[in-house]
Length: 374
Image (tube, rainbow, N blue to C red; front, top):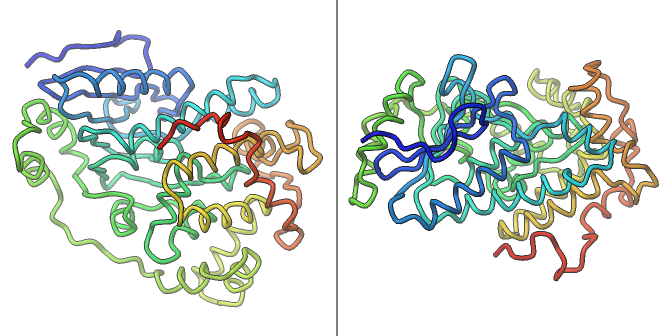
């Protein structure tokens, strides 16, 4: 069947079409690795809400694009340069971005129709937010998955507290604190992906969706069998070390435990943590352990509170321009000197009173921007 475009396919960053009975979404901002902008979030939400009510759409699939065309990159996260500029300018669209992004994440997790994410190439931050709620999460040999927010003075949001805390053992703490990148096999092992396709098969798998009858029992399994890799998963060689070190009660205890272990992996991991924002490491550890007992909706509300305090650090007697997030983004993406001036500068200098207010909501429950999530 001929594809029917639902949005102009030129000069747009989200291209949508219906092929057969499947709604197809292509993120089309390849020069920015499909980093999400506020207009992209709004376009995705509008599309998904429309297709949710459209009886002709039986399933939805999403992919990214690269400079070479479809696939090759999924989504590198949110547009952090926009975050930096908006924070310095006091732009209200920064608050709108996170409220609408988190609502979109919830919509995807609760979507009533099959939602399939082709997680090829870079899948980080906001890219995880629009893929972790999928019923089918496909990775490839090119997948590079991470939640690297502590590297820019933020925390793994977009529901990161919810899905990372449900990884096996204490691997969620490891991923959240270090921001380490994982490939296809480890993503599947950690429960962050469901199956692996060869990158060379993605175009064929995408095209075959249009002729797949999602109302027929077994049709999805048949489609998966046709394209999924049969190769064995390789367990992580560091599972025992991750659980031993990242089960400690505090960030200081985790780092000191790693530093006392002379294995190359432990030394590398300790060095990585010493480079991250000391303050946000403490916040993130508390986030993951709180979220382990939360629903997704409650986690997203907590993260909306947290992101407010990240960009409005009044409780630290700092201006918006002095936040860890503004400084981290400056060092990584603006000045690119890779030498953030964290405050405090060492893990041992972070006091509990700096961390606890991140979990205090600036809104009454009835006024919370995500109050309607269930």
